Length: 328
Image 1 (tube, one colour):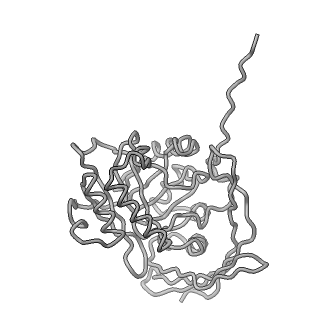
Image 2: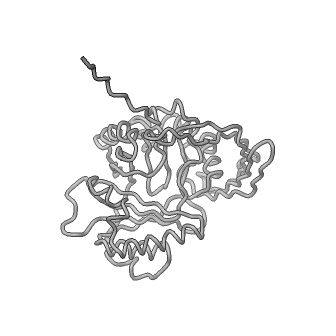
Image 3: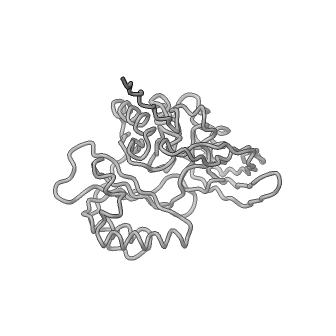
């Protein structure tokens, strides 16, 4: 008699707690423009599959791809599940987040109700600057409050399904005071699951729990566990994201909402490893300007899995940060 072997358990790239993957600092995707689309989860895969795209969508994405290649700057694209009844017909809700020039505190948000062609016209206008009319068509009032996007896209990575879905469900039950929590498609960083993107702040967080997100919403309690889980703000490059996380640990909660400009002013590669200097300019709670300089170096790298479904590993830099200069 042949005895069937028990099915093997998939080894996930995230354990849900952050015990195995090193620091998450500097891992948020960099973008100045992000689109968030309300789409039912059963349509997420079709949205990602080029074989289902209309000729117009394929043409627009081709031009956007050329722009990304030429500038080296990507754009954000989130899909979130409806919490209420989706819009009737072929319309769906769209949020556009754009970074204004100067000191950064949060992205500017515009809301729309658009059909499929209208979405691609908006993407062209926002990223390629093809005209202002598409930026106005279909615009709707923008609600106050913050949106918390939890990656639950288990078909992209099982870790996001296992850890993200329970987190989103728990947070949705307790959210209030204008805070909204969304079940969201893949936005990268499976090994940091459950991973959360905070908008309009544009920050991404690793290995979150209901208690930590609630604490972050209220800006109360010990901020250090949150500083350890900050992947970074999409408004800054990876070196500035590392400095940003260490500045949060140093300065406390007010740092999150302070207008700030973080500039990587020096990069160096030598036998000691990659190094960078980041200049931090910001507005303190009393309205006075502050400035710090962060010296960052890569101390070592860890080999970590980027996917639960593939055995390949990728190097994950680990950093040491020292600050000079005192607050003004």
